[in-house]
Structures are given as structure tokens and as C-alpha cells.
Image (cartoon, rainbow, N blue to C red; front, side, top):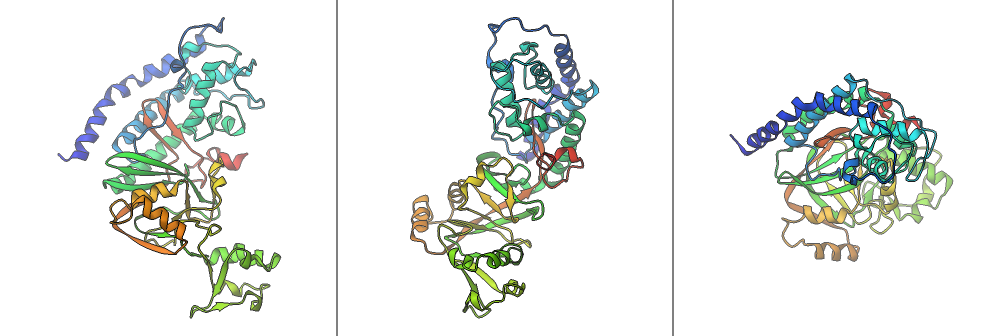
Length: 418
């Protein structure tokens, strides 16, 4: 029996007891929620861990035997929640936060208890206390939302997706995990999770680093890809795809004839000679047949580095001069390629086995401003995937916006519904 098979069976056996206990677990939660007495005092003694505020992040990769088993267990949990009537809608018209006292807090408590974010020991009360605060932050982390403990519009939208729909989302994504699990058996790989807009660098079955990403817009979607990273270009030139020339550059040149010059973009003919933008009729789209290349530099669309891998979509990963985009909640803003936060850390890890390319040389090369392609001595597999629901812990289910409407329910496209 190989190591992967043994590991899978070990995890599976650990969940045998969990699966059997799931119905009682759900019944206990629902029974306690609806029969609990109101909290009579702010001084009740139990710690924040009882409120479900523990850390929900994990170093378990999304594509792993453990995640597969945890997700199967989560489906059992949600099946029982649905069987018990699910959860009710939480009134979404108010901004609730620590210190609020409002009747709607009771509906919020019930919702958080049923999903396992708040212990039933917290009881019912109109007071938004520290236990509700910790539970709401836990809920927000599980849904990829800023854990600020405030009930904003995206938090309400995620909270008011029905238990039945969440169950369906878990089942859909369990199938995705099963279908592509075989591609993730290498010791090192990079996984781009499109709906989460996040990247995992995985080594020996554990996530060694995660990176916030910006992925494709709805009308310029990031594709599903299985390939291997074979090249890193330090201080890259940026060659604008024809689609961007048509949709972006030509309209911008019509408004501002100096746009190309201001952005260090040159137009090159087939023989490599440079073409004067003033000689082109920008009222037509004839320019889309030409090559537009941006010089390396701080305003280059890829900033310091480009990460290449063979694929039929002309897709790649890269740095960006627009670092503020990583702070956006909905990071679906690219033309299909993937922007990577803290990309220098990822590149250092990718180049680890390439002789002579330590962090110091990498940084020195960036400062030189010289276009420098580097071939990886050992290509690193890369996988672009679409996983919008999964579980990496007992009772910890993660959900993300179904940005490309692949999960079968409009209710899951939170960014489009608001």
C-alpha cells in the first residue's frame, strides 16, 4: 500500500465516528437553540472558545485526502441541518456590532448557533456581546469576508443563503475535488483557487504559503489549467493581448493620444521596428493587428515579475503595480491572468532548486531594471481550479462567491446580487 493510500485510509477511519455522530450533533444544536433560556447577565463565565471564535485557517491543502474527508463530513452535517429545518433569514437592515442591543441580535445568534459558529451555551439575548463578536468573525473568515465583526451587506448576503443551497454547493464541490484529485499528487505544486481568489504553494502535503490573488472578470474569465511553471521573467516586457488592445488601448487612445507614451508602451511592426502612434488611424481597429509592448519598470502591468507555464490560453501569473487591488473584497478584476500578492516570496520558493537564484540575487536583478528570463531547473506543477466550497476541519466549512455561476444557484453569486 503506497503512502498516499495509507494516509487516505487513516483520515477516513478518523471520520467514521464523526459521520455516525452527525445526526445527534445537529439535533443537539437545534434543540438547544430553540429551548435555551435567555442570558440574564453579561458576567456569565465561559471563554471565547465556546463562542466558536477559534482560528479557522489551516495548512491542509484544498486538494488533499483530509479535505475530501472533511468535506464529506460537512455534507453529513448540512444534511442534518436541512432535515431539521435549516436556518431562518436574519433581518439585514441594520449594522450590528459589539455593544449593539437590538432584537435582531437574537436572530443572528440563532443563525450562528445552527451553523456551529456560536456555542449554544451563549444562550439567547438581544445583546451583541464578545461571544457573538467572536462567532461572527469566525463566520466571516469561513466565507472569505473581512473578519471585522460587523454585519455589512456581504455578511448578511452570505448568512442568508439557505442551508439547502449550501448543502448543494458542498456536494457540487465534492465532485470537483474527486474529479481532479489525481492531478495533485506531486511533492510540490501551486494551486490557484479562482472563486477564492487565493493561491496555495504546497509542499509535502502542506500549504507552505498562501497568497491573495486577483483573477479574471466575469466577461474575461480565468481558465481551468493544469500545467507546470517553467520560467520566471524578472523585469518583464508586457505584450498586450489583442483583446486588451481592442477593448482597452484603442478606446483610451481615442480619448488621450498620449496614452501610449505616458505608459511606456511601444508599437512594434512584424520586423521589430517601432511604429509612431501618430501614423495610425485610431478611429478604426486596424491597430489591433499590431504588437503593443510595454517596457519594464514600475508602471509595467506586471511590475517586477512574470511567471510562465505552457497553456493554450496565453495565461500567466504576475506582480502588479496596483497593490491596492489586493485589499478589495471582490478581487475579480483582471483580464484572465492572475495577479499575486507577495509574489516575490512565491518566486523565491519556485526558484529554490535553480542554482544561483537565491533571494538576494532575485532582488538585485529587480533593482537592475534589466529584462531577465530565468528557466526553472525543476518545473513546478501549477493548477488553476474552481472550488467554491470545502472543509479543512471538523465543523469548519468554507464558502466563496460563485463568481462564474458554475454552482447552479443564482443565490450563490453574492457579488452580482448586491
